[in-house]
Amino acid sequence: MYTSLLVTTENNICVITINRPDKLNALNKTVIEELSAAIDKVNTNSDIKAAIITGAGPKAFVAGADISEFASLDAAGGEALARRGQEMVFSKIENSSKPIVAAVNGFALGGGCELAMACHFRLAADNARFGQPEVNLGLLPGYGGTQRLVQLVGKGRAIELLITGNMIDAATAQQYGLVNHVTTADELLNKTKEVLTLINTKAPLAVAGCIEAANAVYNESVDGYEVEIKSFGKLIATADAKEGAAAFLEKRKAVFTGK
Image (cartoon, rainbow, N blue to C red):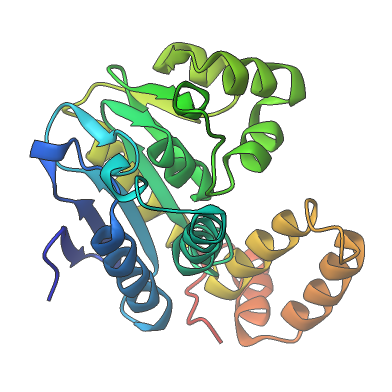
């Protein structure tokens, strides 16, 4: 089904691997289209509770976009490219009701850094490198990088990274708040699966509600507090909330069904 991705599902966790190691897993039209389809599968398949996005090989998560696709674009074409990618992949990941986490190995540059930032959170191998080097091409990030980098690391650090084009290592990325955990390359996927396995024991509707309400912080068109209040009201009437309360009072582990 896919020519540029490897997609496997085990224990309710879907692992999406961008599989162009000879091109350092660079994003091109095909990768964007296939990522969009894979994320749709995550969102619609009831057997999948969470997903991981990673890159094939030891060198790169995604080392950027395929620059050869830029050469013939005019202003309208460039705007269409950025809008299409954001709508098909980056915003779709961010707004997924299921946790989608980046496991970053090696270079996450340009569109690769943007892809990692679109995920709900990030884990990194100690060999990971993050950066937005678009200024070196006379460009700026086009897949939400200017917005999400500010949200994650703060305006001053973000602008410095954006306008120098400098890379930061995994330890610095963790210090900045860009990644949650740093581990060895060998342990990266296992650690990511461990975190998601814990999340998958929680009530799925509550997890989705947390993601939606947290995203509302940065959505100026909605009142985040109102999103939270309404979501709390909906959740308290669910079977999972009744089960959670009963399990707490009965001093047993809750069994959630997503209803």
